[in-house]
Amino acid sequence: MLKKKTVGAGLALVASTVLIAGCDGWLGETGGEVDITAMSAEELADYLVLETGSYRLEQEAQEGGSARDRMTQDGIQAACSLEGDPDAETAGNVIAMARESYEAPPGGARLGNWRRGAELARSGYGYRVGHRNDDHGQREPGGNCYACHQMDPAEELYGTLGPSLAGYGATRGNDSAVVNYVHQVVSNPHQYFPCTQMPRFGRNNFLTEEQIAHIMAYLLDPASPVNQ
Amino acid sequence: MFKKALLALPVAMAVGAAAQAGEWQDPNDVLQNLLQNNPDSKYLHQSEMNIMMMPDNPALWLVEEGEELFYAQRGPNNVSLEGCDFGKGPGELEGAYVELPRYFDDVGKVMDFEMRLVHCMKELQGFTSDDSAVGQRHGSGSDIMKLTTYIAHQSSGMAWNPPLDHPEEQAMRDAGEVLFFRRGGAMDFNCASCHGDAGKQIRASVLPQMRDSQEWTKAVSWPAHRAGQDNVRSQNHRIRGCVWQMRHAGILPDTPVNTALISFWNDAARGEPAILPDLKR
Image (cartoon, rainbow over all chains, first blue to last red; front, top):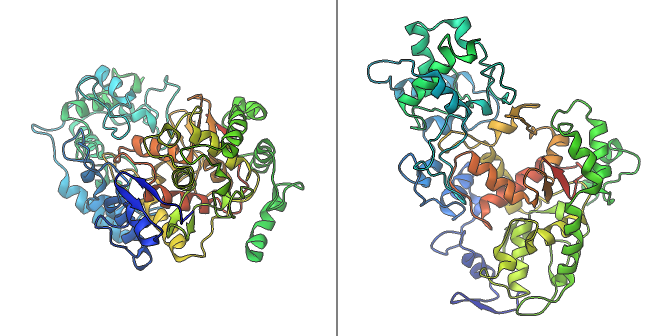
């Protein structure tokens, strides 16, 4: 097999391990050989993600920036890349980072329209890139809450990765302390649940403040089916 | 080799009298043993319909089509794939699939199954990336999926046993574990967001837990017919779908992030029998 010469795309593949490896394009952009056994597992993982052409990193991301930005970890993502629960020190650092990066909405947190919130909670559309790209011009992205949470007790299809939120507002009310707390959890939940699996919907610009207000109404408005 | 056989032995004994570490088993028998041994696994028992359909798994059609393709003289060089070495020697397919990814001397790196298959189709048969034979990676009608299903079937019932003797095999497996837990993307997810706990659901779908090797062997047993998509899918297709749903960057075929992840996946199922091909929701 090594003796076979194949000419393609202007490159002659010859029987050299180094050359063939270089032509496969992932042992460094310069074609130089990289010794992957000399790296720690963490270094190698970062190298594989960012330096080997494994992802379409130059693609535009819907939230702004590029796919490369998505794959470059921020402080919370890096600190929470662990198995199981964080230790006390990590948890403290993550809470501090989350508090520092939290932004209260201009004019304070408020409730929007629970009917709009119900649509957003059901929709799993938005922000996917790669072989197919979600087109936010065609369809509004949603919060995909039902993928992980029970909400309306009459809805049969719901995930269990997160806690049930059925009756959430009915047991807590919706005074300003509750509304502010729920906003903090939806926008940047690591303030209360360090290294939670829940996305930072506000911090990551995944949902707009208006959309968050609608989803909060779905959770907290006494008229919402979540609270029946 | 002796050490590997010893490691696999207690597992093989646990899954039933007929099963032995290196012995081929019908994929339905492998599944039935797993179900019996794990009566409380919500993941394994989630679809009665799919369990019932398993003896008539539509993926079995691809086994026959893949066998024809494997032995046919094809490509610009008009040769069969019998000269392709998947790690057990040229044309040796029995048990090859469950011992991948592995380091290949001829290319000087670790390759996963699909990478190796494409490598052989290019180097031996002379196909180029522009040919649909290697360009089309997904769907039951693709050559790649037919060949994948045929070759994988030759390892059905055998224990996952990706080699870690070469330092690069160990490095890729370890990087794969880091990647499994590496959080990123617009939703801050890692693989463990969905595969960290037992019996969790995303919407209606029960998810496999990575640290439960008897759930995980089914999880990584691709190729599998996906009933919901009416197509036979690969490990690489599963990775692409997860990464897309996680809102990470789009992943490309024949790239080392795939290889590292699959190295870790298959290692996490080590010692458990593979269901090849499987049938999934």
